[in-house]
Image (cartoon, rainbow, N blue to C red; front, side, top):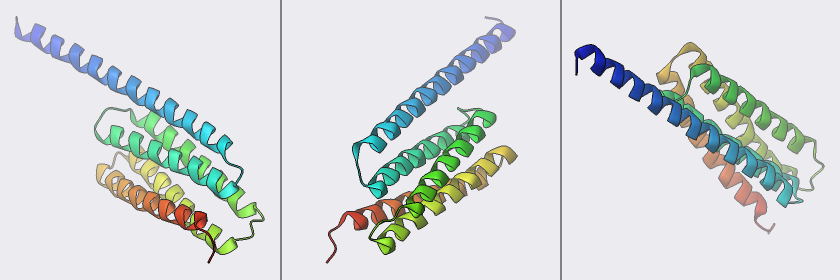
Length: 162
């Protein structure tokens, strides 16, 4: 095979691999968003509903950020997805804060974790828009920490009051 033919074959293979990665990423994102919708419908407790919605959004944000950092997702798609997810989290937090729950202290811990997640998603979006992988990596670490905070806060909320 001539050198030009070899390069063409590698380029075609690379494009096919990229397309497959993006398609898998899109399918996973759709699956996660479906899970978000189902989770939101399964509980009557607003804190549980919003926590599940936000946790699913956070997992999606981590997935698309990882895909962009690996070069498997286009920047424009990734930034738009992160922006949409941050808006979802901000809206969930707004709804949670407006709820007249009898446990405002426990609810505020969940809300603080949601605010931190939204900020991390916005930071990841900014990193993608500027093409800064180190900034995206930092935002991804912040996402991980905020997801852990949300898990702990939601678990504390679900514990019976002593």
